[in-house]
Image 1 (spheres, rainbow, N blue to C red):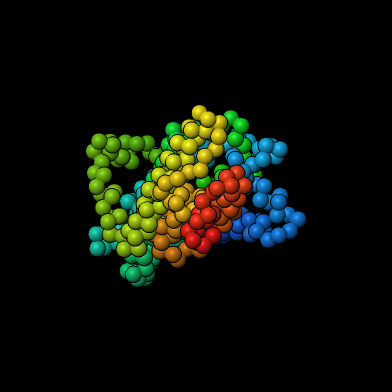
Image 2 (spheres, helix red, strand yellow; image 1 turned 90 degrees about the vertical axis):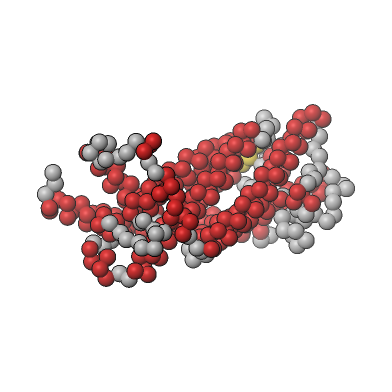
Length: 357
């Protein structure tokens, strides 16, 4: 058993660590997104660096055979989605369990346990002096993070499936090593950005629970068997979220469905190329309007996530900005390649934004 002094010191250490993490998670993520966006913006400005910077974004058919230096096989895309699924699942499970245990939101009244109060930097004083509105707002933020991670999980699971079963990457298809590292960065930072507001308290809670489990064991922690868990209790608070979350989810699903369709079209074209060894022009779905509809759908997907987040977190705005700038550059390169490859390429198609660009 710990003495009162030891417990007090442990609580103070947890609070101090949490406060430091609160600063680091948001600030580091925002700095990282800005650092990733800036070179791409520079690449859009004509300069001696433009060719080099744009070269990092090229892959597959847009990467010239003479530019194979510092490249990796395009099938390494699989690494992105394995990392994304594992990391997103871990964040989702931790955040959902924290929300259920410490922020029982959705039944009309929201309260915090003593441990949760300590984790958020207070104690009983926190419960006594903070307004109920503040508590409800905090509960909304935590459960909103759960909701966003559920959507992200749906996205990365589908992308992993498509990489394995839909896309058959040619052994000669390559991508620049910087593009590879950018992909790993994105699928690590993106899920974390969606829950960055609640991440510090979630990580601290998970650490506390793990330490308690190691010391006490499963039986003393009274963890019920999986078969006895009432899963509806874990889901019910999500039904009390605001209308913006559900509109954002609808936008997300709209983009998700169209991206799935466009990826199926591209996957079928790769099968045709293996048969006749020729590239063909894709048709169907949003290919009627743009050359890279799967990129447009990706922007719609992350726009939906931004809407579902409530639009108050700068980190999610920067996440969307990265997606828009990165995919716009990639779409422009793809559009240019199509025009050069096919003299009769449809004139009405734009690169990524219908009727505009």
